[in-house]
Length: 125
Image (cartoon, rainbow, N blue to C red; front, side, top):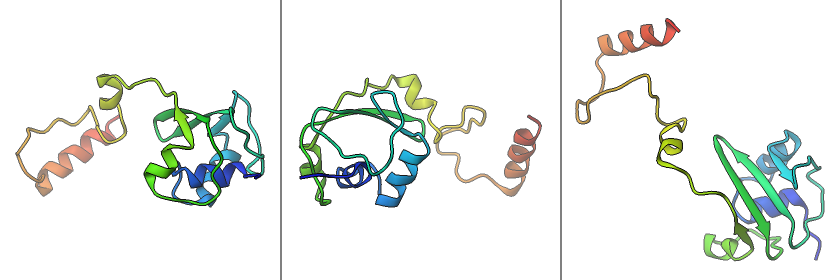
């Protein structure tokens, strides 16, 4: 069985669509042993891919080929994840946490005045 790289990454649920997987490969966000490649590359068992998804880096090794998208448990059986575990600081440095803006937990939604102050603070940079 021959499987394209973009189809494989979509089938193992690394990307939500094959187009997104193809665009990531074309954009150099996915590397094969440190080198760029085309979305039509034929995947082989044992190859190692380095994926950059947002701020996350994943290193996966192909253990079995998969052409059709299935559930998450099925997808996990077709690759081995060799990504280093994230430290607490790396998790906090994620895009979802802005270290410049601190709000007390439980203080509720910012008021219009608070939003203006926050916006002014961010624009000052």
